[in-house]
Structures are given as C-alpha cells and as structure tokens.
Image (cartoon, rainbow, N blue to C red):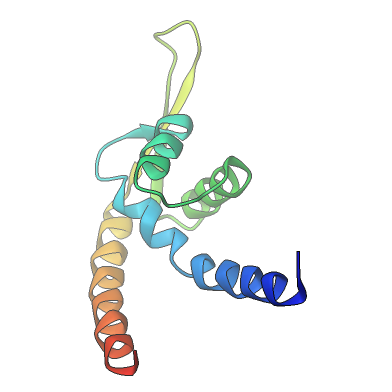
Length: 109
C-alpha cells in the first residue's frame, strides 16, 4: 500500500466515523439483535465491522439512546436493541443536521 493509499484510508475512516451512529440509529426503528443489525447495515453497504458495532451499541445504550431486552425463548438468547424515546428525538435531530451538512457540502463539491 502506498503512502497515498494509507492517507486516503485514514481520511475515509475519519469520514465514516462521524456517520456510523446515524446509520445504526436509522436501522433501529424496530428491535434488532446485533447480528441482524450487522446484516442490515452490510446490505446497505455501511461497512461497519462487528468489532465496531457491538461497542457502539453498548455505548448508545449507556447514553440512553437505546434500550435492550433479552429474548430467551429460542435456543440461543439474543439481546434486542431499539431506540429509546430520547434516542428517537436525537435521531430526528441528527437527520435534520445531516441534511444540512449534505446541502452545504453539495455547494462546495
């Protein structure tokens, strides 16, 4: 990998880091467990790794943006996540801010 490739990769990671929370919240309008959420994000080419997603889910839950519930009815227990009321409000605000950023960036690009 050339120095230019490495620099581009670093900048892309920084760019994506700011959008991951919005992408994850957008998929939690209904309850999802970690792996199903990972698959949804992968289908939409979000490029989020499991090692990034699971700590993010725990952080968002700790911040009060998500609530979780264990489903133990199947052979393998699964922890389902969904947005809390505060999470829904924050998500709505983030969408508005995202649209403003996109509009401003379109003017630059």
